[in-house]
Amino acid sequence: MKAKFLVPLFLFLLLVGFLGFGLSLNPREVPSPLIDKPAPDFTLARLDNPEQTLALADMKGQVWLLNVWASWCVACRQEHPVLVALAKRKEVPLVGLNYKEVRGDGGIDMRKVAAENELPMAIERARGWLQSHGDPYDVSILDINGRVGIDFGVYGVPETFLIDKQGVIRHKHIGPITPDALRDTILPKVAALKAES
Amino acid sequence: MRRFLLACGLSLFALVAHANTAEPVAPDQALEERVMALSHKLRCLVCQNQSIAESDADLAVDLRGQVREQLSAGKNEDEIADYMVARYGDFVLYEPPMRGSTLLLWLGPLVLAVVGIGVLMLRLSRRNKESAPVLNEAQRAKARALLEKDDNNGTQA
Picture 1 (cartoon, rainbow over the protein chains, first blue to last red):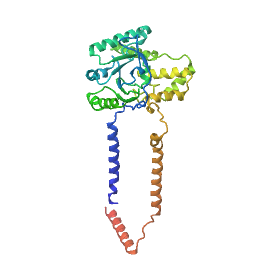
Picture 2: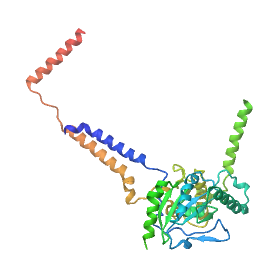
Picture 3: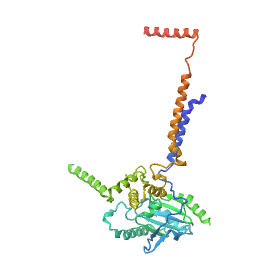
Picture 4: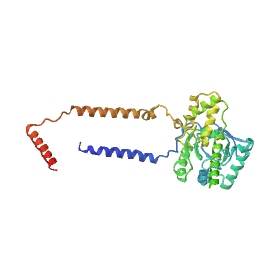
């Protein structure tokens, strides 16, 4: 046992290893319990025509992406060009879930917004934003009060869900989609899911 | 300067007043207490180190609203906790549930304590067994000589 004096050094290196691993993790990324579970059901008004609704069942049989966005969301601007480029490739339908367009905006005092004005305001703001930044979505739907967002476990916009033909959530991307994440993770998963019967 | 300080003070007060009036409160005091009790056990996913009772993040306000709504609809605390876990995972619970993946978390400190006390007791009993070394006559003489020499040094200095 001549090497006994090395024991504290070994323990120290072990600790450094654990701490180093801890540093590489992102505490903001909380794994979703919804992965591999059926997507929560929803029926929401469409942004292009609020008289009509889109429901989860309407997307059955397709592999598709649900992207949570809002015009007040700063990080959404960062990922927006990536989405616009994705839409041009027409590989996967992209549905936009417009999340709490009016009441989510910290700059708006909701006590000054009459209840009946919230929906028209949301539509105007969301459409305006898509007009000036480009509209990558096949369809956007309006989650005015954020209830569908809660069902999807949304806690930070933007978030993106990959949903398969059976309506099961297969992947969740938290935060803005980077070109790398799109190329290395999301698109390969889309291709694999499309190949599934 | 005085006017400036007054302005600062007043604007601070305005902020506080705003925060106090921001949220509609259920009129029922007993219900509100249950809402807050449960909210203290649920983590805010935006701020992570605050419960949804303490946080003023948008999501925390929404989730408090959910808790209030579901409690008044007659659901109990466990059902609402399950509702939150189904959406946000075990991470929303400040007290993680006991299961295979959290066993180390729950039992780790106990295991460490048992191992620590075990090692300590082993060492102590080993030390007690070690008796003082027995010296022969020559060694004793050498020791005595060393001690005396030391004494002399002491008096010289």
